[in-house]
Length: 80
Image (cartoon, rainbow, N blue to C red; front, side, top):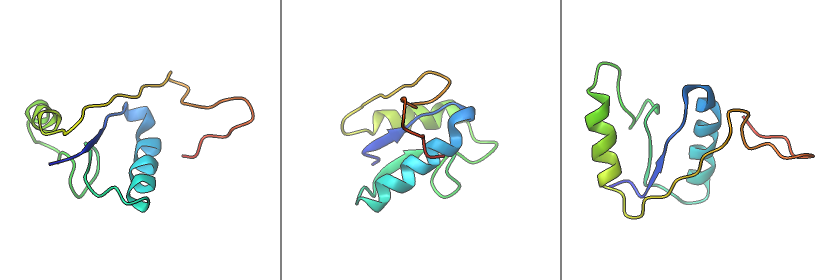
């Protein structure tokens, strides 16, 4: 069961991958990132069903969204 579900637009994929890696480095080992090659959604899969299954398995749903330009603030450079 994934504890954290990372959802992102295709434009934000590098940032989502960075976030997944950063969370794993900090001890989170139960993550779901749909585009991840190891445990994401493989090409050709019924992706809507897989996403719904992952969302229903969450211990605590949480959402974070950002404008299309990302989460940059003045003086802070977002990491890819």
